[in-house]
Image (cartoon, rainbow, N blue to C red; front, side, top):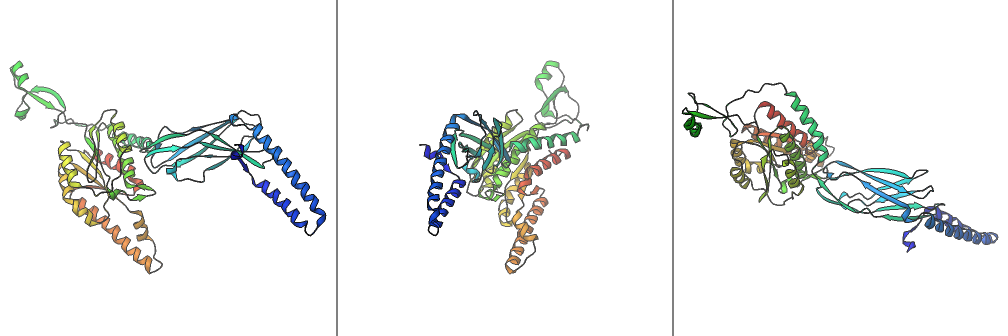
Length: 444
């Protein structure tokens, strides 16, 4: 059993190679043949002693380890993981250890050297870049301890298996939350004029005056007082902010190992948090060829948690998005004018021409903002200098594709539809800035 835990180090092979060299030279110099046997015997005796010391001094129970990290991993960020090693044996130790990280991370060279010296505890830190939502399974810690003469290594397995979920970026949420608060402070001190609104936020009952709407008369209060009374409504302060995520195959395109859907997931969580911070109501709609998840806009304290759970379990679809179905569901569910942040992907004018009638109808009912992603690869080809005929062809095609994106934006803006043209990695901050800009202008 102990042989499974034993590994031979390179110094042993080097010494054995030297002994073999002596035996080889003994063919030409027979006098050193006996010296070769002596050296081989010494190597075997020293090796046995080294192995005995290794397994007697450094027993498995003398070592312990602990892995520490955040309760949930953040999508699209570098997540710090710390390994805390401890020993109870009063001897100097050195070697290396391997932490069995999740297979999804595709990291195969994570090996750390250690040297306790005179210490009983030490900590090693590494980072994991998470590019996919879901559960990440960590394995055990494999600790390798060098023998006193460093001829052999013993493997010690410390059980640390656990499963950790990867949610939409909590790190970015905290970072951009500060950005949102700072933007809010820019508008402090501005006097907001109270207007008699047309929404459902009741303010008070007042006497009827000429010009008040007849339909707002409160007949019960009129009967009690003998005077005409009318309900006054204050302009609703809480607006509905919906994040609409297209989870069809158009959003499956990866950039920096993350799909556009995952970028939209992070941006939706940050936008929802900012909306609730601004006392607005945050909601979520997902769609593809079929109706997806739908969370009605609300500013309840647990609303962000609901949105986060739905975003965590959001699945990618390989079908084509049905925008007509999306329009019907929005008409059925959203009764008041709201802000709709639509995360989708248009790579050519033909794709946007098919859905343009639906977008026009949505923009008449709500404040629609369409996110258009910049394809960095085509932009790179379009701006680089061509060196040969093939690269000239790539440059021309990439330039045409980049121009089509700009024409799409102009067409949408011509129809009164707000747009965000952004690189995938800048989506979260640009989405948040757009929301704060529209909020400051009073458009929502």
